[in-house]
Image (cartoon, rainbow, N blue to C red; front, side, top):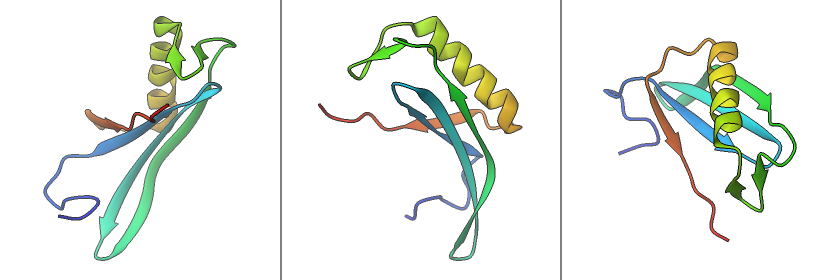
Amino acid sequence: MGLIPKSQSPLVGVDISSTAVKLLQLSRSGNRFRVEHYAVEPLPPNAVVEKNIVEVEAVGEAIRRAMNRSGSKAKLAAAAVAGS
């Protein structure tokens, strides 16, 4: 199984840092990848502190704005959780 399975529905990768939410949707054609949609949405100060989401509503709203800005219609998301 590769990075993006051929039969999978569109999937958006989500990265939440202390300063921004970043989204990326890739597609695959053979062995090549193409960026289909992406967005970066800034977070308010202290929404994420020391890898902890403090302001859940603010982060959720930033994700919503990033999805709208990106133009992606994906219904599935993948996120990685960094260790401490």
